Length: 392
Image (cartoon, rainbow, N blue to C red; front, side):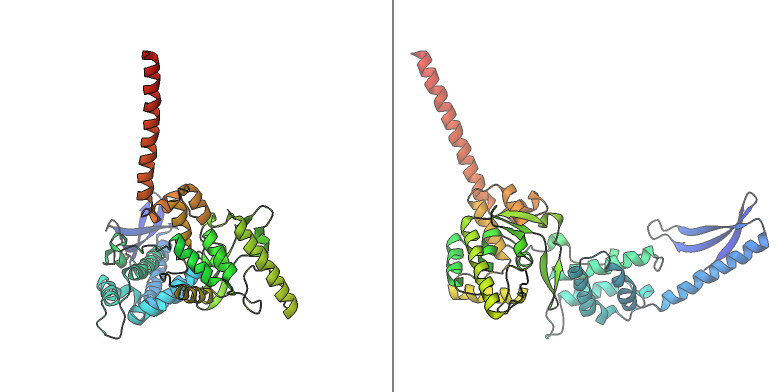
C-alpha cells in the first residue's frame, strides 16, 4: 500500500493509494487531512499505509470458507428469516465449503465458480446426484451476495461472481402447480374421515392455508361467532427442529372466512380435543391441531400422513402444498374473482395469483367472451323490438 504527502493551500494531506475502482477501472486514492507540518504529515502517511498494508496481509490469508462462516453468515442472521438463514448455512456447508472453502478469498477466480456450478449441474461421479438449476442459481446468489459485501468492506476490489456463468432465472422451468378436481378432493377427504388429522386436512383444503400456517393456528385465532380464521404465525421445521415464524409477508397475516361445514368440523374437533385432554390429564397447549399426546404436529408428519391417505383414496399423488393450489384452482374455475382468491391465499399481489394460476384462466376468458356476447345479443334484441314498435 503506497502513501505520500500532497498540499492544498497551507494544509498537508496524507494520500493513500487504494487500488483500482471495480466499476470505472480508475485508480482510487483517499485524502486524509494531516495538518500544516510536512514532517508530521509524512509520518502520518507512512503510518496509514502501514496499517492498511497490515489489514491487507490478513486479507491475503483469509479463506473464502472462513469469511463465509465467521464474518458474512453471522452478520446475515440479523437480516434474514431464521429458516432462510439456516437454508443459506446448509447450502454453504454442503456445496460451497467442500470445493471453495480453503481458497483464499483474494485468489477466488471466475473459473473457480464456473467449475463449481458445472460440477453441481453435471457431476462426473456416478454416485453424485445432479442439482436442479434453481438450486445452483441459489448457490450462486449466496456467493455473489457474500462477495458483494466483501467488496463493500474493502476486502476485495471486484466481485468475480458478476462474471460467472450461473443458470439464468428465465431459463429455469417453473414448477407447475398440480391440483385435484373437486371429485378427487372429495374422495381424499372421504378417505381421511376418522384419521387423527382429518380436521387439519379439512381446514387446509377449505381455506388454502399453507402447511406452516395450519400447524401454527391457535384457538384464539378462530372466531366461531363471525366464522373467521386469522392467520398470524407459522410453524416451520429447520432441520428437524420446530420454530415459530411471523409469516412470509405482511399479506400472509390475514383473516379468512369459513363456510358452515368447516365451522362444524372445527367445533367437533374442539370438543374431542378438550375431552381427550381432560381424560389424559394433558395441559392445554392452545394450538388448534395437536398430536396423540397433545404435542405439536411436526410438518413432516402431516405431509407423510397426507400422502398415505391420498394413496389409499386412489387419487393422483400431489404435494401437501398442492391442497392450497387445489383450493385456488377450484375457486377460480367456479368464477370467484381472482382478487378474492388472492386475499384468501395471502398473496402479496393479485398479479402473482394471476401468474400462478394462468393455466386456469383461459377457460374463464372464453366464459367471459360468451357472457359479453349474450349481453350484446340482449341489448341488440331490445333495440330491434323498440325499432319495430316505432315502425308500427
